[in-house]
Length: 320
Image (cartoon, rainbow, N blue to C red; front, top):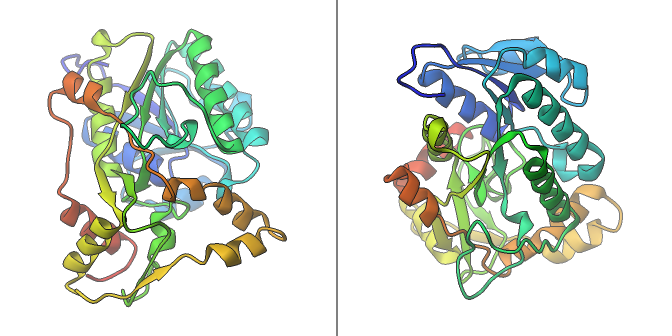
């Protein structure tokens, strides 16, 4: 995976129609990779992403044979597939990851996993480095810890790039998509946290660029590599102020997520229950220390926050 090598590199992306997967596909294509994507409905995926020059293959990430067949001859597997709507994580996430590990082992390929902060408890004192103890507060966090342990024990070449809340590109499951209403005029925003609590955000085009730059230095990587990536660490008030500036609406109304109603709804429905479980991310800081990545790359991709927000809102059909 060295850019000085004229041999065409090929990647398989699982979850290519999702937030990270679609942006990573575009980044790899721009850097000369061939990209395959495994989808249960390739025609629908092709229609969703007509501008991506991806080879769409029919199959399911839950099916080991499908993943193995799609991975034949690849140098990289981007494991960007997640259980939908935060649900059935243990039931679905671990089997899918095992299928990627088996396929990567057969091809001597590296797996790229976009990591999350669910692995960690809040730390009010300092940003969290890569080697910090992983002490998840939620079931999803525990599954994520098990996923990373599984990867580390596999002997397969691994790159985990961990980031905070994703935004930019596609996808509808991130918190960003609860704050704003896609396709609607920006008349207000729904902020989940306190104004004085700092939150870690990751702009996906920058994260994908960082991942690609790391992969291009394969000869310098260890078998198991883990880096932290952080685009912006903003208090609630800083985030609100930036949205108001970008939208040129200095008095844009701010609504608060009705956590009490969510708590009541969680008694009857699974999605509110899953959202409630992640509330702690908005109550205390869970911030990532990305100095190791800065040292390794020298220059970490960093789009100015105003430009990133404006582009992301436009991608959601919100005119600012």
